Image (cartoon, rainbow, N blue to C red):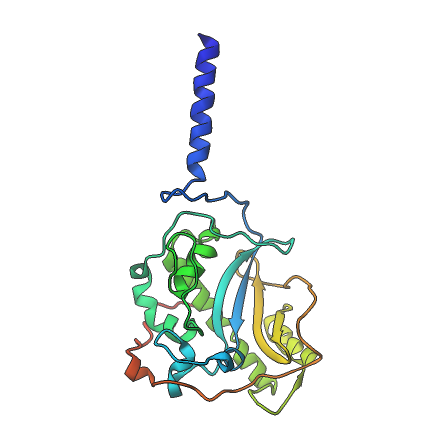
Length: 260
C-alpha cells in the first residue's frame, strides 16, 4: 500500500510539472532560467525605411513629415551572458488595452518600421508590440510581471539615454554623403552612456545600436562580439513616404512617464 501511495504521489508530481510547461492552446512553453541583463535595441529608421517598397498604416516609415528621424525602439530584450537569450517564457497573451495610455508614445518612439505582421508566441500573427511582449517581455521576470511596466520602463530608459542626441552633440548627424569612423560613434556613446554599446550595420549603414543594462538599469558593457560594421559607417536619411500623422489618426503622447 505504501508503495502504491508513493507511485500515486510521483504521478501527480509529474502531471503538475507537465502542466507548468504546456500552454492552454496545447503548445509547449519551455521553462527557462532567469536572464542576466537587458539590451535596449534601437533602430535607425534612415537605414530600415530605405527598404520600404509600399506603404501601410502600420509602418512608421509611411507617415510623411511625421515619419521618425531619430532612433526608435526595436525592443527591450532579456539576454544571457553566454550570448543566447530566452524567449516565450510565460503564457501571457498580449492585450493592447493594458498599454492604452502609452499608445501615443509607442506609435511615435516604438513604431513598427515594416508592413508585415510578426509571429507571436501565443497569438499567431500579431502587431509589433505583441511580438515584443510575448517573445521578450514575458522573459523579464522578476523585474517585470506585466505589460504596462515593461513598456513604460523601456520608454523611460529610451528617453533617459537619448542615443540620437549623444551622436548629434558629437557631430555625428544624418547624411547620405558623409561616412563616420565607427570608433568615433562608439566613443561618443561611451562618453555619455559610460558603457560600450553594440552597433549593427547593413553594409556601411548603421541599422541598430544596442545599449546594455544590469537588471537595475545601470549601464553595463554589451558583450564583445564580431561587428557587422566596416571601419566607416553612415547614418543615412530618407525621403519619408505616405501621409502625415493627422491623416493616420496617430494619438499624441500621454503623460505617464517618470524619471528613472
